[in-house]
Image 1: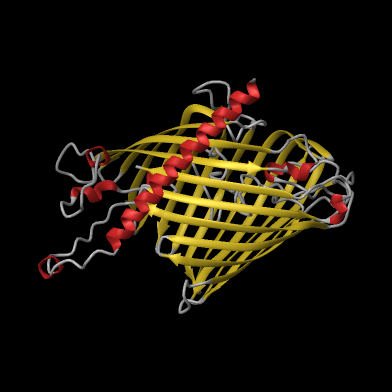
Image 2 (image 1 turned 180 degrees about the vertical axis):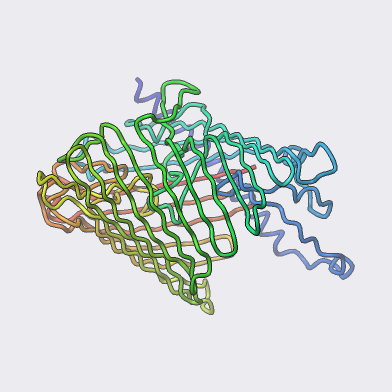
Length: 489
């Protein structure tokens, strides 16, 4: 009976997603028709051009939106703009802005952990709803408050990243002041933070529950340089009741970072952080984890080439065992801008260490810290531990608002002495010390359509073909399908 009710809830959610998606397609069709109307008359063309622009309501960090553009009368008004820009006086930089984001995603995953774990084939809907209030007081002070409610519907195995009833996602005060010839910025309170491509420090946007930190963040920007310091306790998301999230007293993450723009043809950054965790457990080590991480990244673009290269080394100890781990990630691409669709031919190569000699008093399994769950794919078949990953891809710009990606991924273990890992360092059961390094390969296709400034749709499908050596352990091929609708206001 419970299964039927769950199935009915999931089915109704899928229907709702489909209806919303149809609305999105209709919105897109209307936008397409508007884009193809006749040119405006000469008088309108001669009118003064409006340089103020509305920010996107689908931005990754809603607190970075600047809605003071609505103070300019030349900006076209949309419904409910009276709530997007509420100014009490004549200063356009002092205002209150309200907003909301809703993400619905249907997922089908027929073989979690390649069928070697307890999870069974499942299809379900995950929903994330967010509302926020953003108060700006002149050019120097900002107060941002955001609530989040994340729920799965029809999912059999619910994890902490699937469900978090209504709770505070962000609540911070930010300050911006000129100091000398540079700018000082600070944020105090609960906030999201991410570095670079979010390989190792991310807001965890792929799963249903985003990652927040109770933190003090400060940076100083001058010329090409940016110096950053941060002290954080990651938020521990609970799923029992509303407003029960707390700072994780058993985990801290703090450090310093430096960035330099325009270093040659790209941007250079580096950081050191200390990651402290109580009661850490690895396959052959347990205890208090004190991990020092050293990271460097260089990214840039010289038409038609683009690249992003990052490496990290980790030292420290887990209990009495020492840590010696590493990882790297390289993305590169070549864009044929003169060819229809501006195809980008890309190559991604990633690697992360595994424990080569279990029981030797040295922990070599790389800890991916706070990883981006969809850096490889949304399917979650690969985690950033004990991994060698090679992924050629082709990305097409079908239209200004529609992007299509196709890719093949090839996956090995760095060492067979360690396990195969999925997302969240989930161990694929029975793989430690068994099989060959070859894990398997997958095919991925993804489409992203920006229907309108407020609506985005996405579809992703992944098929993973497991290698023979883990197939002999009982592993099976895996398929994933995700259909997503996102709405921002």
